[in-house]
Length: 395
Ligand code: FDA
Image (cartoon, rainbow, N blue to C red):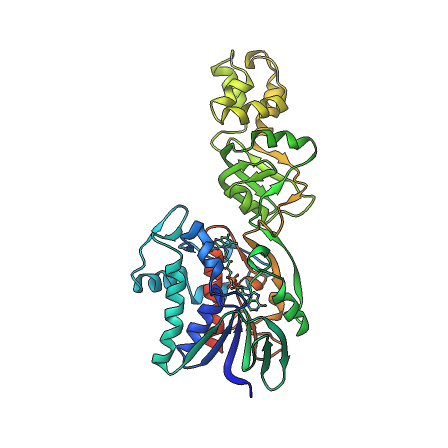
């Protein structure tokens, strides 16, 4: 006889645990099935072990999705302040690092422990949350409700929540399982691709690999994304927060534009010509950027003479190029290095209020499995919490 639950959640990650806790505290009997040997593994490695658990400024503009309006409802109903309040109610010490990013002072373990404690609290409200790890899902069938068979048992739920995340970091067991299951129920998938991921350089641009380890504050742009943060040159290409952010907006064949002089205007070298005519492009750049980067950029600009002897036109072109340096990445470092996935279960299939599939009553999808992807900096967890709560309220 299969065990009966109000809902079965597949995946004990950020979104799944939040959803289970919320529904459990509404008196529901919930089962969470997790493939790994313990819950919340991505939370544990997040933010360098300190979990950047939210971003205080999180709003719909910080997310990518084929439908930019989709995330609005859930994000408005469960905000960063709501999650912070929960964190504080557990006396978890936190700090703001930069740009609204909130981290634990101690360890990401505190966030997982808090979520599990919230699940346990269900019993106070007449509900129950059972979390079962090492459960490898074999089949999911829809009958009156949903029947899930794993290598260890068969379970019955009136509803089913897909919370198995995206395929980033396969060595942690991440797969496209959510998409396969969604497809089985006829839901469309927006082509998934790696996001928040380093980009690789080839062709003439391999030259930049020689300065691996050098970083500089820049503004990196791709598509509609524009990010003033640090860029880092690596032995394979480009990384650092500005590049990771822009990578989510980058598509193969597109350029990445880098402003190497965000604090300077487009006439900078002309101004330097007036002030220091004996300077060269290289020496002027060395005052603004790390030496090795300055040297390589100067070499590429090939304005050989002292500034005083260079034409205004050549200096204007060089200044403009420094403010819109075009890289043509030949790829990304792939899902193996991607912090998240852009794309996923199409939002056209889901209610933005409840995350329930419009054509398949009782089926829900939350978290990274859905085509909603946040910027770097706590936004992805905020979506996991908010979408988990939205479904948890509706189950
Ligand atoms: P999540 O991946 O958390 O959970 C899915 C769960 O489902 C996993 O436990 C998985 O084992 C399980 N599962 C998968 N397949 C299954 C199956 N077939 N059956 C049963 N269970 C299955 N974000 C942020 O906001 N701040 C940060 O600091 C970081 N840092 C960070 C670092 C690194 C290295 C990575 C890779 C990612 C981040 N992120 C982040 C992103 C963040 O971790 C991610 O967006 C959320 O964990 C997504 O939450 P979900 O619950 O949707 O998936």
